[in-house]
Every structure is written in structure tokens, then in C-alpha cells.
Image 1: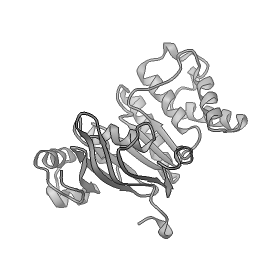
Image 2 (image 1 turned 60 degrees about the horizontal axis):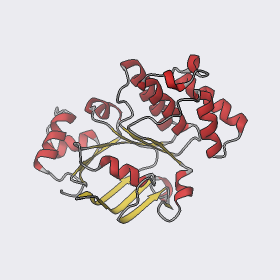
Image 3 (image 1 turned 90 degrees about the horizontal axis):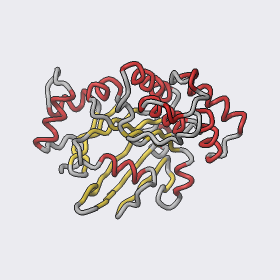
Image 4 (image 1 turned 90 degrees about the vertical axis):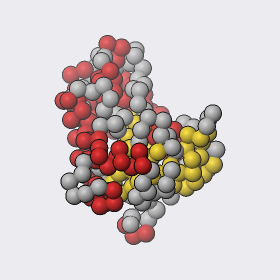
Length: 256
């Protein structure tokens, strides 16, 4: 339960989106305030489509999306002001330096210039980009661009942070930095929703795990809860994930 009866960080009900076939099919999902929630699923399960609808990049065919009690469909700007989004492909402006990019993004969120500069320096320092703060992004590796994009998602200090495969293309050191920054944000009270194909990361970092298959939530719970429902005391998340996806076992979500 969220504290004092407050609405959850995210509540999705009956969410649907079809292209040539249903990509998200009546999805119900609730993410608590202050938790690290991992959204897992095979390729084509509907994870990215779900996140893009939550962040307002795609229009849902049906359903409701509430972010901290704000109707994200009726009030998209208000919802986006408290949401940070990092897509699976980093998007930064090549001709800008990281500092210039963060100043630009801060301006979009009406963050004052003095506060924006302080936050930008802090984020770039955390992410190991302090020495590159005034270099143009066009010469950066994919991993460096990913970290700049992450800083851009965090610079307005969102309450809900949504990340789609943020560790793809990062070396071990960079991935550790990103995981550390996200863990710090959760400890500070933020809510993080993240997709990953690296199940060991979900196993170590998630407070709760949701598994999507065929556009529906087919399993949800803590690691120990999932073990109790589909595995045994020493089952790995990989074992449970494969079992859930292959057999369609219902473990707290809707069956596919």
C-alpha cells in the first residue's frame, strides 16, 4: 500500500494498443511510490509500447493512465512535468555539449538557470562525464551519449523515472554508475520503472518484478513471491521468467 492512502506512482487500467495486431491487450498495472519496478518480457511482448503510452509518446486505443493521481491522458503536460523518460536509443543533439544539452532541457522544464547549472554539474559528475562536459556530443560513444540522455531525463528531478533498456551498450563501469544513480534516486523517494533483458540486474535491483507476455501482465511480485508461485527456494529469475513466458502461468497478473 502507498502511504496514507495516496494514489500510486503509476496506475494503468485496461490499456490497449494495436498496430497490425494487439501490442498491448488490456494491461492492468500498479506501481507503488518509491519502489524500483522492473518490467520484463520477451521481444514483442509490449513493453516499449506500454512505456511510450505512459509517457505520452503514443496514444492509447483504450484504457486509463494515472501518474501520482494525475490523469496522464487528460492532463499530459502536468503528468510529464513529474516524469523522466529515457528511451532505448539515446537521443541527444550532436552539436551541443553535455552542459549545453542539459541547459536546453532544463529550459524546456522551466528550471531556473542557476539551479539547472548546479544540477547539470552534479549529474555529469555522478555519471563520470565531468571531464567531457564541454565537448560536443558528436564525438561521443554510444555509452557516453546514453549517460548524457539519462542526465537529461533527470535534470528536472522527476518523481517517476521510466527507462527502456538503459544499460544497452554500456561497459561494465558505465553500467555500474547508471545503476548507482538510479538506486540513489529510489533511496531519495523517487519511483523507477525499468525494462531490461539482463535478468541478473532485475534480480539484484528490483523491489518488484512484472512480466509481460502478449501485451498482458502474466506475473508480478517480489523475487521471493515469484519463487513461491512458480519455482522453488533456489530458482533463479531466469528459470522463473522462462517458465512463466513458456507456460503462461498466472502468478498475480492476468493470464495471457
